[in-house]
View (spheres, rainbow, N blue to C red):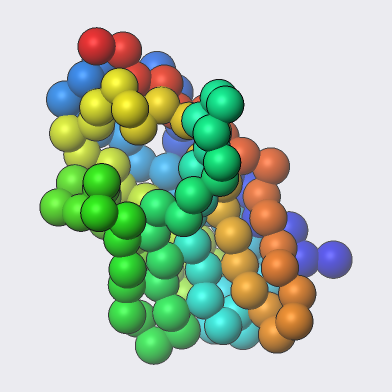
Length: 115
């Protein structure tokens, strides 16, 4: 069973940075695409950033220019660099991978930004 394990969340002040990591138990080159999602209390889960197997990336408008998604095939990890954090970035962040017909989720890591 493929597993994704997130790390790197925490409590920071507005304007600071955090780096989230997602370790995969499977070679990430086997995934069609990977993404970071987040879910704030009382809100629906939203896709924050994604990266295709070919390296193309997409971002939700609210994080463009502040967040950067990357992958390291040698380490089988997905990373989300988050800069200039805002209180509205507070959420539970999930790593996601699409492998053929399968959708794989991590358990989530909490990011809390205090203003």
